[in-house]
Length: 262
Ligand SMILES: Nc1ncnc2c1ncn2[C@@H]1O[C@H](COP(=O)(O)OP(=O)(O)OP(=O)(O)O)[C@@H](O)[C@H]1O
Ligand SMILES: [Mg+2]
Image (cartoon, rainbow, N blue to C red):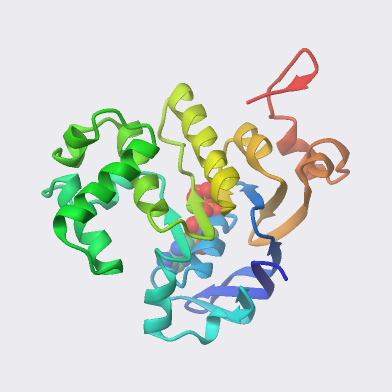
């Protein structure tokens, strides 16, 4: 059974139908990249999976199954249990999502204590351990810092560490590396892939960087105007597609001596 399955999903904001007939399956430990132009509905699709559509967003047709359960029938309590534990989301700028007037450690300890009953001291240690796993040097200092005192790459690692605290089965990442320099981007891409290798986390990554999409994705989904134009495994989409939109996008993957690289 697939870990996640979207079947004939339509999503509207108010009366505007935005995403049409979205079908997508993701197996355990699989990474799926979603690419496509701005406004094509990528964020809308992954937010729908987490029940976090903005504004008047609503799934108006179809079903979303997670681990065999229909997410669209979930009530608030079910969602609360699922978020953070089973499914986590990382945003483009995790730092901006954090409370700027609170130290990282304070936010992190609070986050941990909403998920399990442990002492503040133990939560602090747990937070530090997760930061170290994301290779943040001097985790004690990071915990004592305010978000604005960290670099963009450090904040993003903190965001990913938080998202991974409970080793979710599914990680939804919306442009997690777009705001970062190339070196940091490459490190974070590698760290996300290590998470998959270590914990079998399934990942959906939305990115404008076709190189990152091609490097990370076992499968690639191409979206345009709210519809999936084409999807398939990496090789199919990168090298064998005959769809003009897909081939136009994939031509943007940098290549060196004939080999594609990120
Ligand atoms: N809260 C909202 N209310 C109304 N319309 C929205 C809302 N959020 C998104 N939309 C519309 O839905 C469409 C898809 O937006 P979405 O954010 O999913 O695109 P995207 O593919 O993630 O784009 P980008 O690459 O720029 O992030 C756009 O036309 C957008 O205007
Ligand atoms: Mg988006």
